[in-house]
Image 1 (tube, rainbow, N blue to C red):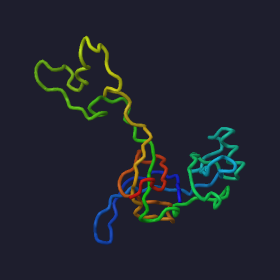
Image 2 (cartoon, one colour; image 1 turned 180 degrees about the vertical axis):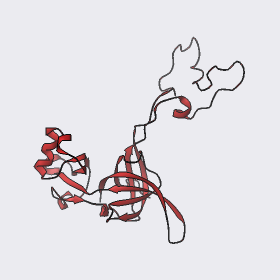
Image 3 (cartoon, rainbow, N blue to C red; image 1 turned 90 degrees about the vertical axis):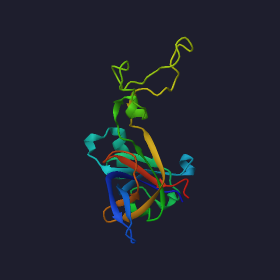
Image 4 (tube, rainbow, N blue to C red; image 1 turned 45 degrees about the vertical axis):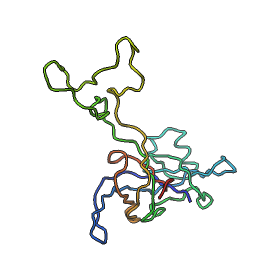
Length: 211
């Protein structure tokens, strides 16, 4: 059964297993996510839920956005995202998807937007080496280096690793393990790291390539 929930990355910590092993985990504030719209095969051609997350003030939304929440009878939310879910007939508009949709031991895929680093050079962006710190080299030792041959091809090939915008990309980390679910705190503890800085919005879905 395909299921998903929207959450907010809180940060990383560690917990101890029963055998004393240290497990590094990322804490995600998952839900509660009110159901704003239910999409079915009969009406839309596929099954999905449109979920809200994090309450917002009405003045911060425009009329089309606000109209969706008023039609559903749901308080306005900062985040509105559609997720593919099986068994949509079990959900009604206005219902809530909570952290207990997942349980400990399940495998999940976590999607988010990576941390932004701005305009960076080739060393930070592509992990290239510095130029030699000797006479005749420089004056810049962190530059890309040779651009290629002179007369042929007389141009720089596309996709060459150069300086540029680094980060702020949609990334999905697959096959992570849910270590613990705390419904009282709306928290899901996931083993390992997930994309994005603290406070960023992520989507947790059950893994498509689980072992």
